[in-house]
Image (cartoon, rainbow, N blue to C red; front, side):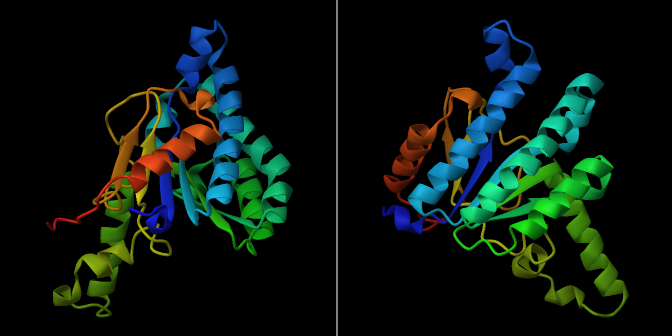
Length: 234
């Protein structure tokens, strides 16, 4: 199959903490190196002509981590956005975000909004950060919006179908992912894009995220090109 059919890649960037622990370093060092790997991923997508990249940056479950680690993660995210936004803008990368963004720290949300506005003109690649994100919560939020429309008389129950439902998801502006990549060898999707991954090709690598470079993404894309997507057909 031609990789021209590949428009959207979704990634669970897993293994930062283990990467650091293997080297006797604090987990925060792993997150820092993970941010650099995210930059490499963006660069590789630009080189390959990928149109959309969704990165699972912080899940709702991540709030269960120690406060010190959460504070470090949020600080790194704010620093990453502040320092990398202009580079994204110059490279025509449009930044977007999904999740319950109002629940992240105010300073981080403020910087995120600034970065989204600054890169709004990007045409080559849309990079979507899943922040304070949960696939189940996204589905519940979509149901609530649909119910509100039904109660208000703006939508009939018989009109509800998969297409209508998808229009109420956080991701309604973008196509579903064609390729889902998970690093660190874990064989699960961890509450990520539960609706959108229905027909997505899955690629799992044993590499930890900080070690996942451009050539690794190229190999994942090449593997995608060798598969035959039948969507339930023959």
